[in-house]
Amino acid sequence: MQVTPTIWLITIAVTILFFVYEFFAHVRTPHEPTIGESARWSAFYIGLALVFGVGIGVVSGWRFGGEYFAGYLTEKALSIDNLFVFLIVMTGFAVPKKYQQKVLMIGIIIALVLRGGFIAIGAGLIENFSWIFYIFGALLLVLAYRQAFGGHDSNPADGRFMQLVRRALPVTDEYHEDRLTVQKDGTRYVTPMLLTIIAIGFVDLIFAVDSIPAIYGLTNEAYIVFTANAFALMGLRQLYFLIGGLLERLVYLAQGLAVILGFIGIKLIFHALHVNELPFINGGEPLLWVPEIPIWFSLLFIGATITVATAASLLRSRADDAVTHH
Image (tube, rainbow, N blue to C red):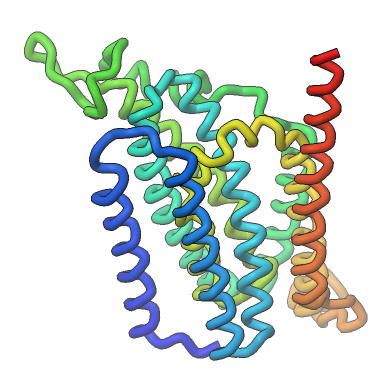
């Protein structure tokens, strides 16, 4: 896939413009978005992501188009899991509804910047060290296990990292509109708003460790990795308000993501064996008999897993509701 520096610059510039527009059009004036507003913008951004994927397929070939769609689906699913943690953080800090948009917007921008850095590092490692696929694959298998059995029981607002931040910074007890700092009696204090943003930035860093190896298990193209991540994060703010109540009903989302991460981890290890250069494995020769999982199978598997996890979650929630009402 040929991507010139000019295409990279245009893509990054357009991505930045989208977020600047989002800020001035929707976030600058604090308000709680309506369901209608959230639904319209969520549909717009998902539609835009699908059109872009078709564009990649038409211009660069459907192998790359398939890689983009598999990557976008995976990153969107991981982003919804990210939203669940955002919800826990904002509940923990008791962020007023009308200020949550600003927190989400800043959190999403931090996520995009962090993922951009990880994408660049990942591309460099893959280019120079084929054995990195073993590490990425093993990391995803560990993350899959943690997704399946870890859950979201702990509140990041009360974690060790935030306790250190609270010790290091003077913090006010109350919000001062959407301000990040406030001056009282000649001393500059940080508000809970800034603490919330720091917590979400920390969460973003952890999620970047999940998402970047996952998508590099589906494509080696840094451009596809970046655009799939950018489109997965676009519209995430609106999706938060649209499916806020639904998030708690997606009881099998973690298990679904565990299956996806485990699958991609196995795919990466298979690929690592296929391009093996490590001297203590098969004398440094590739194991060509190891199958390479095709992208069409990956796309079908990821789509089916998300569908089954969502349907099973909604059926379970409906059954629980029926028991509660009786």
